[in-house]
Image (spheres, one colour):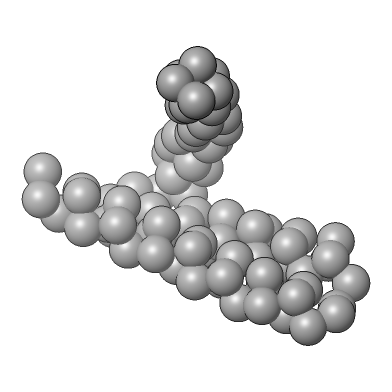
Length: 92
């Protein structure tokens, strides 16, 4: 279980660092669309390769897990952000 949490933290750290660097570059005046598309695609590719390396499955099973986890992530995270925004707006 601890190994899975370390993998999760490592993957998210990579995403946050790449997005932070992209934000700094965008702040300096670069075009904003390619600056954020590249890290998101790069982080997705990194996560796919990291899943393959960490779990050692074949590519078919890895892509299936990657797709499933991506759908869950893209559903749960926005729902959490929305719920948090609603609670904060009700409190304020």
